Length: 242
Image 1 (cartoon, rainbow, N blue to C red):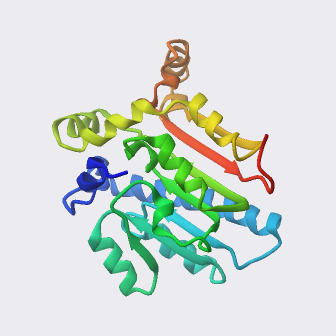
Image 2: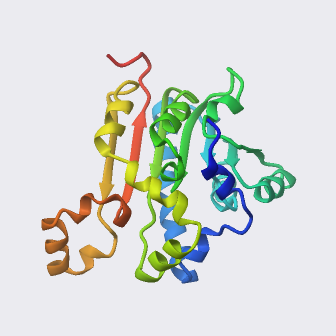
């Protein structure tokens, strides 16, 4: 499935950090995401009873998470996929198994024996021109009993970031956020698992203001993907789900 969005994102001029300039905010957010991933990996290690898991990151961006996790989990084998050539070459030079992709059917970049115990991504699925087919191709890379999680799909923008995104070409692929419906993702995931969920997560700012949060939810704005995060999670059944 060739896609203009992949070509758009593959430009080295695209920078996700340009959307949120506060460095301390980015660092705190990244630390929070790493903790979430560590929790998922620790659970997989305990549940599967082994420490040599294979882990795949879809869209590793600058490789910060791959480096941090590989340092913490030295027995795990990490692989990364990315659409930009420079980050891939940089990570390969550091000894990581990272691959350049130019289409959204990700399983086509791996042999039949290359499947993973844990697959994760951050703000990736909403960039795909067909999020459901893309996710289905990713699920095919997951081992039975493996864990898949995509966190914070859709960016939690502030006003300045909205303007930046609307006025630049980034908007061309952010629009795919609106295609993401929890019901459709749940239906897809249930074909592979009984343990799954797909949900909108409330914008991280609104709970800080009780009165505003009450109005926010009353207007059902917490169901609007563009304003909120979106989490997809599943543990693939050992046998196909009915």
